[in-house]
Structures are given as C-alpha cells and as structure tokens.
Length: 362
Figure 1 (cartoon, rainbow, N blue to C red):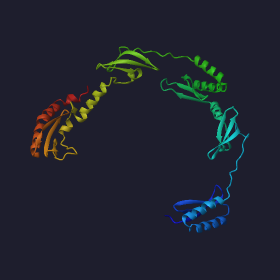
Figure 2: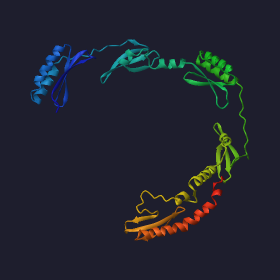
Figure 3: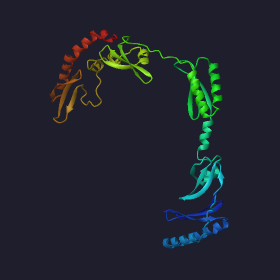
Figure 4: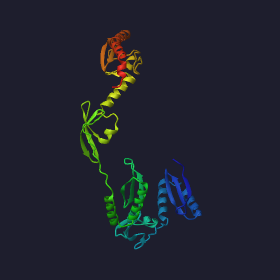
C-alpha cells in the first residue's frame, strides 16, 4: 500500500485550488478552494483525520463532502433567440448535456447541443452548406487518353457535367467560359441550355469492325457479342477451345490464345532453367544434395523406426518405387546405387542427346 499523501494543485479551468489525497489505495477528492490558505488548513485537517480507523475516516469524509457549499450550474434560457438561421423553441436535458429544439429559416426542425449554437458561425439545419456547395462552379479541361482530344467538364449542382471533346485547346477554353457563365442561370434554364448544347455537337458514329474469320495469333474470330459499351468476340483457339475476348484486347495482345501459349511457354522455361520434363527434374537427379531431414547420409535411404531397419526407395517421373528393407545400411546404399544406374542412367543419356531440340521454342 502506498503511504498517505495529500496534494494541492491549481486548476486552470475553475481558477481554484484543488485538494486531493491518496489513501487506502484510492484517490479522494476533498474540494476546490479560492484561497490557498484555506486549502492549506483543509490539508492539515485531513492529515489529522487520516489517523482514524477506516470506518471513522469514511464517515467523516462523507459528512464533510455534504457540508461543502454546492455551486449550482447557471442555466441559460435561450428560448426565442436566433443563432444563424436557427431559432430556439424549447430545451431538453439528455444526461449531463442540454439540447435545444430549433426551427430553421427553411422550415425544418432540428435538435442541437447548446455549445453547437454558440460556437459555430453559420448555424443551420444543413441547408447553408448545401446551398454553398450548389453555388460552387468549377471548370476542368483534361486530355482524353483514347481520343487525344481536350475534354471539358464543369462541377455544379453537386454533379459533374461532361460538356464535350474538342481538338483545339482555344475552343475548349471558350466552351469552358461559356459553360461557367451559363451556370449563373437558374437550374432549369441551365439544364435546358446544357441539353440543347449537347444535341448541337457533331456526333462521331462508332464504326463497327467485322473481324469474322480473321486470325489473331492462335485465335480465330467467330461471332461478335455486344455487352454494355464493349464488343466481345467468340474465338476458337488452335487447340480447339472456345473463349470470349474483348475486341480491343484481341488486337493489342501480340500472342493471343486461350492460355495454352502461356502454359507451353512456362513449360519451356522450366525445361531450360530446371531441366523439368515428363514429371522429372533433371537437376534434382544430378544433384547429390541431401534433404534436411535425412539422417542416413545417403539419398533414398531412411530409418524405419517401427522395425528398426533401413528403408530404400527411389522416385522417377513422380512415381515412388520401393527397393526393400535392410538391416545393414551398406546393403540399402548398394541397392539404391544400382537403381539409380538402371533408371536414371538411360534417362540422362537420352536427355543429353535431345537437349538442343527441347531448348528450341515451339
């Protein structure tokens, strides 16, 4: 248990002296005092009372706290007062906070906390911010990546309006200034002008390209299908599989296929880099490196703890072959070496003879 301590500190918020004590593993709040000498007297009194037993101290503390003068919180009646666009009607107490029901100039009633009325410069039900946002007019000119033309857009009425595409930058700037001037009109007049202007712009018809029968690397276009803004083509691959490819992707890809080209390329890279062919890794066969869990020191020979003997095996083309169980590790090593010569030997000889053909791209 910590020793009994009594402290006096200055409170900035209330501008008074706070007396607190630490006793019985707890902090006790004694009181606030305007005079420091009075706080010192209370500190000495509490120090003497702490010598009493706990029950007597607790009864004295509660009686002392009740005897302190309570400072009632001053209630401000704001009924009928106007804050920004809000006029206060009635108040409501929720927990320790006071809320005011207010009526906005637009006719909507809202409930707002008291501090929100007095601290905010523009108080409303939200209509002020909406009107401020609606009056914001901003024009943009950006270059469209696909058409390489200048795109004019304006932000107004909480919405982005796409004016049009223009080849000349000066023309785009003139249209932007015109749109910003027209936005000063009421919303209905602006909307009618915008629709009329959009109709007056020359429309560039989209030319449909018939790719039926054309071949793109391994894919042959069969028939088109329109989905949303894009055109897809049903294509048949040289391997016989049919897939659906978007028209722009069909032209951009230099090696178009259903995926068989990528799989063949990955297999070719695996053969070149690792010598992986027909389920067998040539580099693994040639290597003398042991597994991290090998305790025999010989590849393919492991300890069979159940019968306390050595187990010999070999794996080729993804298939394991059991060579036998031996009491002597030398016998297991000898049979493993014979199996490597018989199985791995012809395969490595065949692989070396045909390596040049395997390295050629398909």
